[in-house]
Image (cartoon, rainbow, N blue to C red; front, side, top):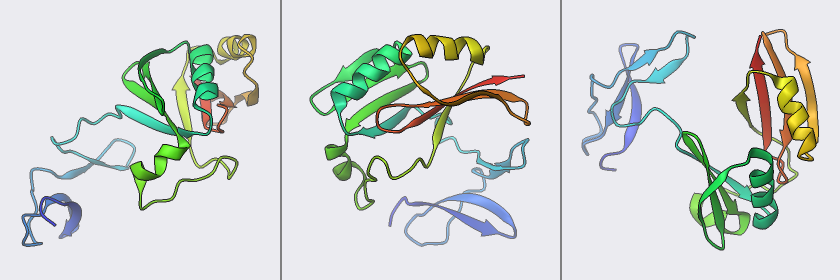
Length: 172
């Protein structure tokens, strides 16, 4: 496949490969570097190095749209009959009707709501207790917290109507 990206190992060094059709090319200028936490990160000029949009598959677009407007006080930057996109600073949150999700991700399967959480979003805040009070006023029920964690954070979690979990976290 022309221009397919892959990671190859060359003498225990990792490179991002841009396949030129021969199957054996790599670009030494696109080395995967170790970041300060010991994890690997890609050092490539081809990617913007930030997440620009998160798409959440929702069962009831109107219900989810109201939740995000009321809970986060977000502005809608685009909407149509199957989606609503919110501006969340440097990331857009796209609520997409679950019925439209399959054509977006196939051949992967769309999970059903209620099958269990497989991720959470974390928002760093200066005061978790204050944010929890604000969420309560907005009618949002916490899943847990506020809890002081042994890793130096105070956290609380809540879920949107489709079960997408959000954590608010304060660095102690």
